[in-house]
Amino acid sequence: MASLNNSACKTSIMNVLWDIQKKRRFISSDDVARISKEFNISQTELDGVVSFYHFYHRKHSGKYTIYLNNSIVSGIKDFDSVKKAFEEEAGVSFGNVSQDKMFGLFETSCIGLSDQETSALINFRAFTNLTPEKVKNIMTSLKNGAHIDSLTQLPQDNIRYTPETGKTVFFNPYAEGSSLNFLKKMSPGNIIELVKNSKLSGRGGAFFPTGLKWQLCKNNEADQKYVICNADEGEPGTFKDRVLMNTHPQLLLEGMIIAGYAVGASVGIIYLRAEYFYLKEKLEKIIEDYNQKGFLGKNILGIEDFNFYIYIHMGAGAYVCGEETALINSMEGKRGEPTTKEFFPVEKGFLGKPTIVNNVETLCAVPRIMEMGLEKYLSIGTKVTPGTKIMSVSGDCKKPGIYEIEWGMKLKDFLDLIEAENPYFILYNGFAGECLSPADFEREISGENLLAEHIQFNFDDPIEYAQKMSAVGLRSGGSFMVFKKERDLLSIIKNISDFFVAESCGICVPCRTGNYLLNRQINKILLHHADKNDLKQIQQWSNIIKQTSRCGLGKTSTNCLLTAVLKFPDEFNKCLQAESDINKAFNLEKAVQDYNEIINEIETTYG
Image 1 (tube, rainbow, N blue to C red):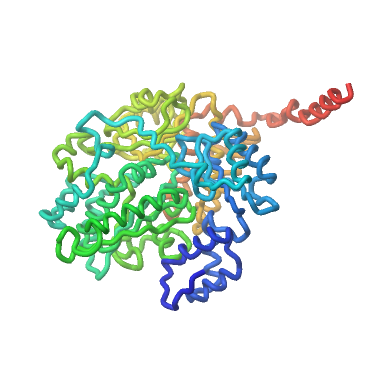
Image 2: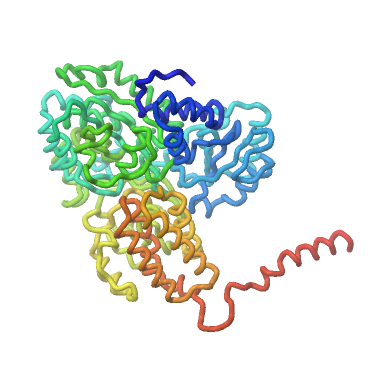
């Protein structure tokens, strides 16, 4: 580890930890002692930081550290057979490291490759569309000394659909620097008014008005301000930001530069999720290219005193860091835990300075709006939500991938577009979103109204719910996972619950304890031990979690479960225990399966 002076800023702690993790494959107690001394923090605090993130290890993680995606779309592809193949080739089960420390096998949640499942990361290189045969070839090559970079390539973009010519916002060809030329003739106030008038709102799912956020930051006087790009695309089923950063990284940089000019910031930071490590080098090259061309640095484009710099901060695996205050804590070298909203980031954000946090798609939209003109942009989509939305599509459809659609498209038309296969239920907005049923297929993807949890409805009357929701638009952060009727809904709900139990940062009791209790209730249903009272308890606990969790991610952690109970009552009722002494969970065939296999083996061997 390179020596650090006593004034070293805690913002570089995660970089130091990454350097050690990648070089030695784990962070030792001696490393913790040395780093804590250099940064003048306690070992206990530093150990808390290390243990918070999935991708830092305190024990050797293998020369080749393998993370297999275990989220639900992987589960309906080849997850089980691929997992078994990795274990056979490594000679060790998942959660362990081979005796020779060559392979470490670990499961992880969604890695932003849902359209190319089953997928895995090996030393943070992406491996997609895995089969047992592919796994055997990869592992054999690594054993024989092949360089890992020779075995992989960047994931496919799979851009399946864009609107007709003139209505495509994001995926048109783009000339570097074209939007920045507008800065020479527009004041910061003009830029903010343009963004306000465009009605652009946060495309990560929160939908806070972008222009208003920028205005609030601009109004706060400070000697330093920051623009943060939230590229911690951790919502399961979402991968649109990955594709945007790979195909149009210039849009992202120029969106950040324009934001910096508008609010008076001089530093931009891309918080890039560790699962996208393979994009880091490409982004750094483009940042350097922009520095060379005068699009970044001092007096950009000759505009006096307009200085702006961009650098990349790597995450380390924590779903909750998608929440802006948790992300800021992470950047400051702390545990990525959300804070109470005593101050908003536009008031006191990164290092206590006014900060705007926007996600990749939001920032990429701004240069396009300037390029195409406000009037043209407002003519696309709907009056309330103009423009287009990028959707990440996966699951039971013939054409998984990226779709750029106009706001206002009906859900049933979108299902036709992606060639959904007998669609029965949809995970909309990822695990923090909601379950959609055929009763929702007439609704519009419009972003114009509220999500289901804000509607007053009767849990015992799904017909009433359908009637009330039919006129409510579907806001989307970008994740769209579709499943056919043959899929086991309860197993998918269990996967979602497992995810939130694992990903809760643990700082507040409702989310930490409530999601664990809900998980136990779901287990009870799966075992056919539950009754109607258990469903009522699920609804009660879900509402408590929604109302009392500290951050938005905790508040939305029960959305899918609540809406699934409401919309698919038969799927739950068929597992509820009747008022009898019969245990529905007992299956005679399964109970004697091992015995029958032994007998068959004996008979085959000895005749």
